[in-house]
Structures are given as structure tokens and as C-alpha cells.
Amino acid sequence: MKIENNFYELFAQLRRDKRPFVLYRLPNTNSLKLIQQNDTRLHTTTSLTESGFVFAPFKRTNQFIYIPNHRISQVAIPSPKVRTKTLTATETTAQKAYYNDLVTNAITAIGKGDIQKVVVSRLHKQEFKQNIADSFVRLLDAYPNAMVYYWSHPKTGTWMGATPETLLSLKAGKCKTMALAGTLAYHENKPTKWSNKEIAEQQMVAHFIEQQLNVLYPKHNIKPSAVYTKRAGNLVHICTDFEFEINDVALLVLVQALHPTPAVSGVPVYKSLTFIETFETHQRNYYAGFLGPVEKEKAHIYVNLRCAAIEETQLTLYMGGGITVESNVKSEWEESQRKAETLLNVI
Image 1: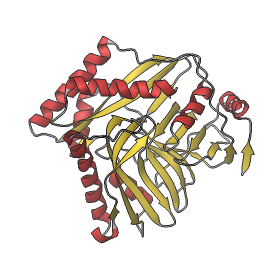
Image 2: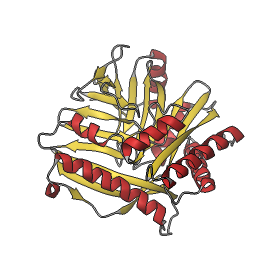
Image 3: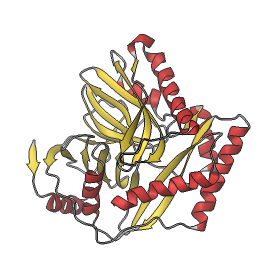
Image 4: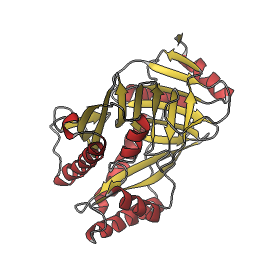
């Protein structure tokens, strides 16, 4: 594998070439990898058996875009530069009204018994004139235990993110997934206190994953971990890990069984997806979809959270929040703003 030492020169060249590429670093590693495509055409897979980096939308589909492993390099990660300007999540009346209406409608639907939980989302558009390469390096530095990526493709646009949530990890026949939910700010030397709402929300996700896996595997084959608090940058979440042998189940079957999880849709999944389709007037696109490198008998697939679509002078951030019977409209808005601020403080 070729090793590239000058990150900034390489990054500028990749953007000039206008061919599909992805830079990514898996959680808790120091290895930044680059996959470059030799052509500009759109490569798709219906089986998830081709080797490359898959990038799938939130909406269910039977055809997934991927960048094939035409050229793979390892890239030296530079030290982050000090920021010259801090971005803040400017609040608009229209944004707030839209999200508050979404949350209100969700609480009403839950009160009627239609759904138990639904994840609603919104966009935050921000003027952006900084060096995107610097922003990506800062993201790598700020989220050492997340999957950090920069994806560029003429057919999908450019996306960047740092996601803490594993959808599926496969290696040497062993498969892992996780139930991740609840969000609080991280405070050093201060224990995290989870509310009943957040605990219940995470239990719903864990129950769904267990149910879906039990359709494919005997119950004794699935090993859940104890519930624990997982840190992702300046935020923490409640998490349960699940481990099992993949056996003769195809990766595609597993992905279709789990995506989208209640962590990005709701409970029950199908009814919450109907709610999202009815009440969200924006498109989620690749937010809350999945992404990651896939090879023969090896895969690292993550849910696309903490992400932004990148244009020449603008960022579009995507934020979501899990709404349950105990949700409060004001608190949900504040949490969505906090999520935007967390990402902008790094970028």
C-alpha cells in the first residue's frame, strides 16, 4: 500500500481531479486511508459483495453506490491547525418553527398510540468560507473513537462526518452491531446521569436489534454486552454491543434486517418511517444512511450521523432527535442546536 505524506497537496489534487474518492479513518486507529476511483462513472452494487466503500441513503434501496478499490493509499495525518474563526449555529425563526412543529406532531402521534418513538430531523445551513481540508483534519483530531470520513462523488456531492454508531462490523466470521441512543454533553470527572426518557429510548433500539437478529440466529448465538456510556467527542450516548457469528447469513441480509434501526427511525420502524415521510418536508439524503469499507469476508459499516453536505460556500448539517412520550419541545430544540454547535465548534 502506497503511503502519502503530504496531506494538503494530495487533498487539493483530489479535488482538482473531480473523480470519486473517499478518505476515512476507522475508530480508535491512526490509519487514514484513501480510496480513489480510476473513472468517473457511477458504480453500484445490489449484493454488497464487491470490494470498495459503500455509501447508502437513509431510504431503503436495493442498489448501493460504492467507490471500488481501484487505488488504495495510506495518508499521513497532519496536526490540526488553530482555527482563525469560530462558527456558531445561528438560529432562524423558520428553522425553529419547523422543528418545533415536527416534535409537536410526533408527541401527538405517540399520545394517540400510533407509535412509541420517532426520530425527527432537520437541516441547518451555514455559510462556510474556511479551508475544508483544515476542517477535516480537526474532525479527525476531535473524534478519535468515531468513523471519520470525507466522501466526494459527482453523483452524490461531497459529504463529511464523524459517526460513533456501528451498523455492522464483520471480521474473521465474527459480526458486531450496537444499540446506540440518548445524547448528553460529556463532562470530564463528572458521572453521566441518564433520564428515564433516554434509558427507555435506548432499550427500544436494543430490543429491535435483538428481535431482528433472533429471526436470523438462535438466541444463544447472540451475545449482548452490559449497557454502558459511550463517548463520541464532546457527547456521550447509551450503548449495548451485540456479537455473533455470521455463519451462512449474507452481509446484505443482515444490513437489510437492521437498517434503518429505531435509533434513526423509531418504534415500530415501519410506522415511524411513515410518520417521517408525512411530516418531514426535507430529504434526509445520505444522513442516517450507512457507509463504510466492504471487502470479501470483512466489512466496517457505520450509520451516517454527525454529518454535513459540503458545497463551495455552504455547509448543510443534519441533526436528529428521538421523540418519546416524555419529550419536551423546548428541550428537543435545544438538543438539536447543541448537536449543530458541537460539529461547528470542530469544523
